[in-house]
Image 1 (tube, rainbow, N blue to C red):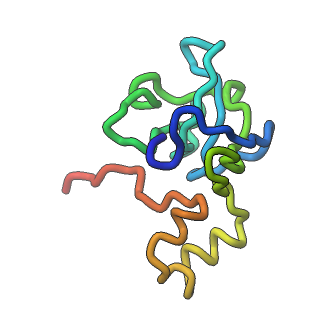
Image 2 (image 1 turned 180 degrees about the vertical axis):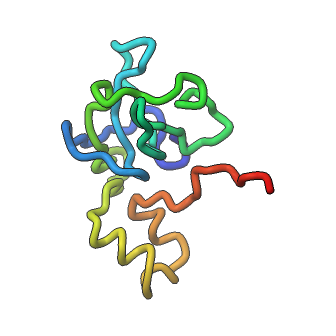
Length: 126
């Protein structure tokens, strides 16, 4: 999850929180369920959540194991507590302000406040 998170970061997780695209989530690995993993929810699919790493060259995410069933998604990461506190889950109202209007004009502000604004879909061939 580099650059958003690094190994050893301590996180505050809200278990059972509603998940929406763009949220950082904690889940059990589909093939090794004793392993807890943190990834970004890209989209909801019929078979579960499509979860991607923020570090795109690393493909140990849904690109290698497919959609993650809902029952394996444990909760939403709200905050990185250590080493430097960082909010990772802005509310819907703040999201709207960051993605439209005057706040959207501030370079990097949305990303610093936990919004991932990159398009997760590859371009479609014409």
